[in-house]
Image 1 (cartoon, rainbow, N blue to C red):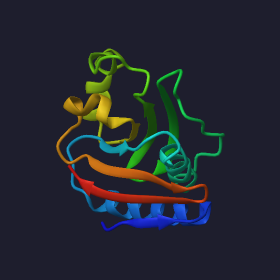
Image 2 (image 1 turned 90 degrees about the vertical axis):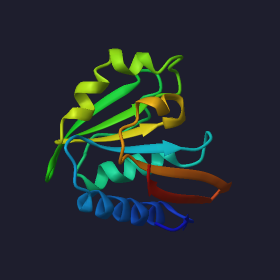
Image 3 (image 1 turned 180 degrees about the horizontal axis):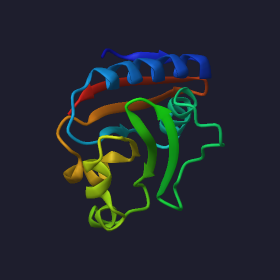
Image 4 (image 1 turned 60 degrees about the vertical axis):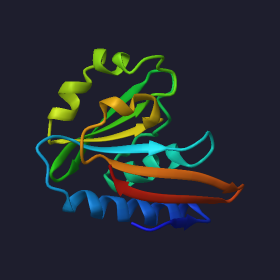
Length: 148
């Protein structure tokens, strides 16, 4: 996927739709992991919120910075859960394992959006979708995605 420039929430939603279209094409044995990279304010959480809306999440989605992980029931076949993880506050990747990471990635009914993926890069499964988010200015973000 090439670079995508977002000037609005609508543009970010359009990129989220492209990401979900790519997700649908992937063959897998376990969960699909969206590994999000980028500095503070680069659009990671907003992108996950827009993905959540497209998947039918009706509750308000906020970054799980302090709780690390939030689970949302969805009915977007073939997925049953959207799992939003924020690794920013993790000191070691092992902390994610203690939260049940291995079980989460083993379940093909899970779609996992992992912010600050660089902090736990050794735990990312092959085939994770790497999404780079970049702050351009107050109203512009740049996104790009590729498989790891």
